Length: 137
Image 1 (tube, one colour):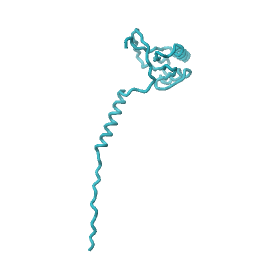
Image 2 (cartoon, helix red, strand yellow):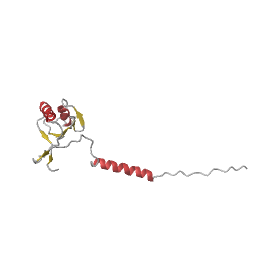
Image 3 (cartoon, one colour):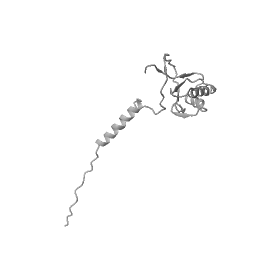
Image 4 (cartoon, one colour):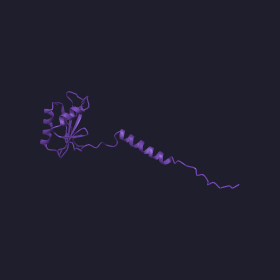
């Protein structure tokens, strides 16, 4: 009888430590993202200063950001001056008179701010506030 020597069987081993490391990284990333530790990527605006006390509104406002270069953003959506009112009404979910806060960069021109305010008024939006920061901050 001929007896052939069988090769030794290799045991397959699943390394679980690298998989646990990847899962922990994903967990930390999504937790930080959900609690807004990672800031949203909007337009950066250097707010002008004011001594007036801030007013709080019961409904959350729609944020319009006016950058130094004149670009506009409603929430996270870039818009033109002509389309700003329709985008605000869309983001306000059909609310008849949405509350709007304009965050204008302190380097933006007054004419750009007036153009935005005119476009809002023509679009039927009356509740408009201008965001500022307290003096000394």
